[in-house]
Length: 536
Image (tube, rainbow, N blue to C red; front, side, top):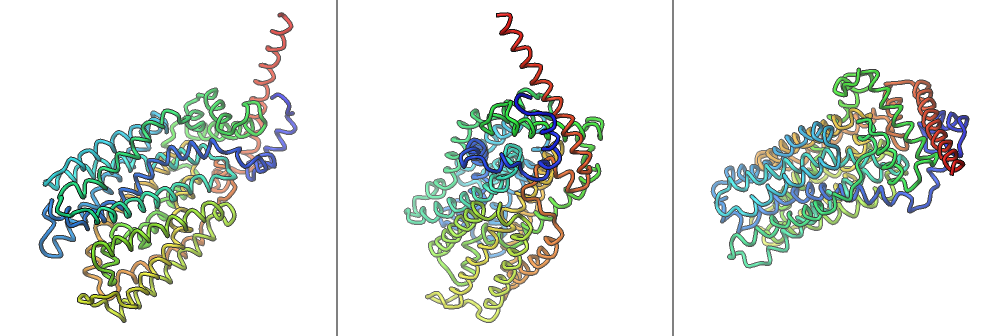
C-alpha cells in the first residue's frame, strides 16, 4: 500500500473496526456528497412507498371515487371496501418484500430497484385506467404494492452499504423523511382535488392516482447513474469493481488509507462468513449471532406497525372525522397539516439528532411520549364524545386533534425512522438482504393487518378504545426497546462483534491479514510501474 506501513494498518485494525478513524471523522462537510446523492436516487422508490401509503385513504374519501365504484351502502360494507382498497397495496408489498432478497442477491441492488420501478409503473397504469370496475383498482394496487415492497427492502440495504459509518444513521434515516414527504404529497393532492368540480367524475380521483407516474418516471431516468453497492460486488468476488466504486463514493483515490482499510474490513468480514458457512449465505441465518438480529427485525417492525401512527396515516380523514372534525375538506386539511408536522419533525431529528443521541434512547423516549398522548386522546374522547350533529368543532375535538399532532412528533424521532436505521445496520454483508427482507415483509404484513382492522376498530371500539389499545402497545415497546444494543458509530462489519458472531481479536487479526494482502498488491503494482518507467 503506497504511503502507509503495515504497522499503521495493524494499529488501525486494533481500533477502527469499532470507532471511526480520526481522518474519516474530520473530513470536509462535502466529503460524503456522493453517498447522499446516490442514496437520494434510490430513495425515490421510498417516496412511492409514502405516497401510496397516504393515497388510498384520501382517495376513498372523495365523493367522485365513491360514486364511480359504488362505495355506498351500510357502514359495515363501506368500511370493508375501504379496507380492501387501502390494504390490497400492503398485500402486494408483502410478496414484493419476500422476493426482494433473492432478486437483489442475484442481480444486485441497482437492477433490483429498476425491476421494482417497472412493476410499479404497470400497477399505476392499471389504477389510472380504471373506470367503474373496482377490480381494476384492486389489481393495480396489488401490482404497484409488489413493486413498492421490493423497493422497500432494497433501498435501505443499498443506502446502508454505501454510507460511511459516521453518517450512516443520517443516510438510512432519509428513508423515513422521504416516506413522510410522500405521505404529505398524497394528503395535499387529495385535498387540492376537493376544490375541483366533483361532478367531473373520474377525472377528479385520477389526478392523485395518476401522479404516481411522475416520481417513478424520474427514478427510471436516474437509476442508470447509480453505482452498484461495493459490498454486494465484494460478496460476488468482484473486488476490483468493489474497490473502484467504494473509492468513487468516498471521493478518495483507491490507494487512500481510509478506503483501503474500509475495503480490507469488508473483505475480511465476507471471507469469515463464507468460511464459516461453506459459501452458502442462507446458512448464515442460523449461524452464531444471527438469529437474534432477525428477531430484532421482526419485533421492532411489529411494534412500529401497531404503534397507532399507521392507522392515523391511512385513515386520517376518517380518524379526524371520528373525533369531530367532519367534512371532506376539513378532514383532508387536518390530514395535510398532520403530514407537514411529520416532515418537519422527522427532518430535524435525522439532520441533528440521530448521530448525536443514537438509536436506543430516542426510541425509548419516543414511544413513552406516544403512549402518553394516546392515553390523553382516549380519555378526552371517553369523557367528551363528539356530537355527530354538531355544526361547529368543539373544544374537546380541537384538544384531541392537538394531541394527535403532538403524538406524531415523538413518532418521528423514534419508532418511525429508527427501525429502518437499526435493521439497515445490524446484519452482516451476506445476510443483509435476508434481514431487510424480514424487516420489510414484517412491516408490510402488519401494515396489511392494521389497514384492514382500522375501519372496523373505529366502529367496534367506541369511547376511544382504539386510542387506549395503541397506547398500551407503545408501553410494551418501551420495555422491549430497553433491551436493544446501541449501534451508533459502529461499522457494518463490526456488528458481528456486537452480536457475538466473532470476537474483537479474531476480527482484528483477519482485517490486518487482509490489509497486508492489499498493501502487497499495491506495492507490487508500484514496483511494476517503476520498472516499466525505467525500461522506457
